[in-house]
Length: 334
Image (cartoon, rainbow, N blue to C red; front, side):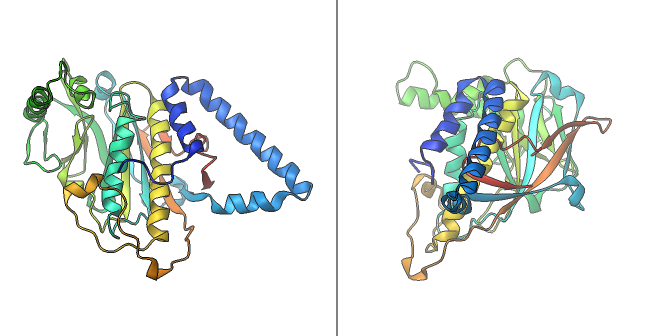
């Protein structure tokens, strides 16, 4: 897919903001901009010009936040002390109501992640995204570290192997690609392979059965792989740079999934294949005979807590100050 679905000028501004580097100042500016727009909207409404604003608001994407206090079975991630020296920052949430079954919706979903990894994640060097089928996860989860020759994972599309062997394989593949394309250095896409150089331990997300379901920034597991019938997602963003980067990337990820979901629901597609070659093939074939009316059904975002080994809260996402950077395109029901 050469372009993310539904992206516009405002959307590009979000991406530019995330790349700018001044995240703290920019976030405060975003909040002030949101307050300014709210005041202007109220003034127009009082002067009789609020009808257009109401139409614009109705057309925005909807996301409903389910708070931990309202959730009978919230997901919790416990972060061990060891991650502080390896990859200390992690943000997670649950996203329910995603539609991936029609046509090439799953392929566009995978392309979406690739695009974000190249763009706002700066080729995975700033942050890394992992998406999982929630129904295949056994909680509670532990964000931990393990030695390279002990950490085992079944990567997407591969057999189970040790982390050090996986990294060696990927580095050899990157070097071979460099030679084939006659480049002086390995491509930017493979620079993230060096982020773990010199580390005595590697980061991993482990489920209640002791299975490694994520090995950031390298891969997540075949065990929790998303398929066409997946409806509920567990989203994970990690970074060795800052917590704010994780939150900003998660904001954009949720926005992009919401955009993709609306397009999928508004346009009934013919059945598509699951061939890997379809992943970059762009939109599927629309079936206009369905004549489906637009659906503005909100996705549900469940808060996930990350706690330390003593149970003390480290981060809760989304908090009331999150999703501000995408507020011009997303209506958040709290």
